[in-house]
Length: 184
View 1 (cartoon, rainbow, N blue to C red):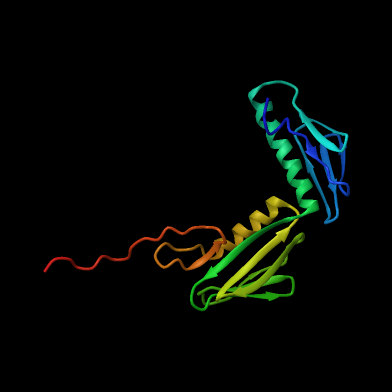
View 2 (cartoon, helix red, strand yellow):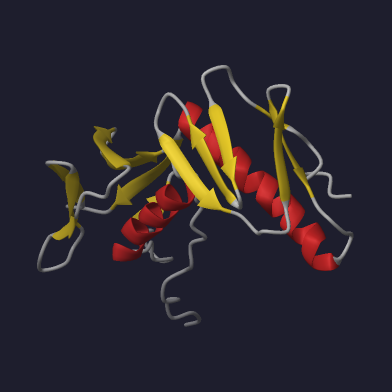
């Protein structure tokens, strides 16, 4: 049996889970999320916990078991504490400005790059020790990760000087530039 799939998901007191056919709705202090899960997975709410069961030990059901449990757990965590990704802008003249609910990034192009506000996502912008930081916050883990990846895609970090937009904990492996003439 899947070690992840068989673990019950403990529900905090303010979270409610409703299951209708193969759709799971989770409602909490920060908002509400819903997701359709595979129809073969059996989901039950009992004793303040969500339990995911699989019908057989086939390879497909084993893989869906852990996946379904993790997706529901991410929904519960999202509506209670939320998710956050932090990005850093590294480079001379690189900066980010908050404009309404969206952001504007200046990163060496001939034009500023505007990131439009997205429903369910909040942007925080701050400057600390000369590094511009963007925090992407929301209750849907997939959406937060995708928006952060889209922002990073505007100007990915390059390996020679390390300039660009990178995740806070990302390590950029630097390459050496041109080697000077050796010898005489």
